[in-house]
Length: 150
Image 1 (cartoon, rainbow, N blue to C red):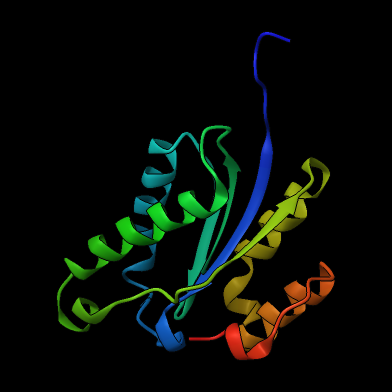
Image 2 (cartoon, helix red, strand yellow; image 1 turned 90 degrees about the vertical axis):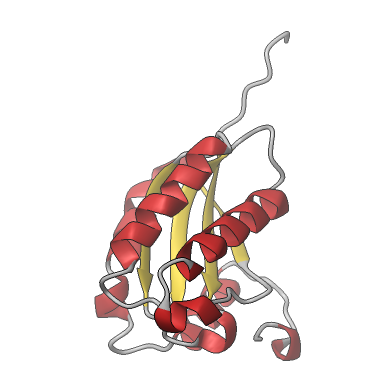
């Protein structure tokens, strides 16, 4: 085959440093738009993005030219620089060091989009930490609790 074709859908999840509630309702729409712009520049278009006060969820198509870790580093670095320009407490903004990256089958895209869209309602009854543990458990991922949080 002469042409390289790829469609890898990935659900990215990462929090603010120490899960600090930096992401106020007024900054989130801009953060989502800026994140989508960064992803597009990396040939990894966003399908949906949503966040709450202390973390973000992104569903995107992973470019065949980018490793997931490099894409996530780029998104976190660029959005962190951007958000610090908003001033005030946001000058101290940082993302956590780690992240979650989960593969998504095409048939599950509608349900993952709904899950991401429902974050505010979802987090009325569940913390980010419990949500992340649930995502790891659902995917049968081994992890050491001591190294998940920062």
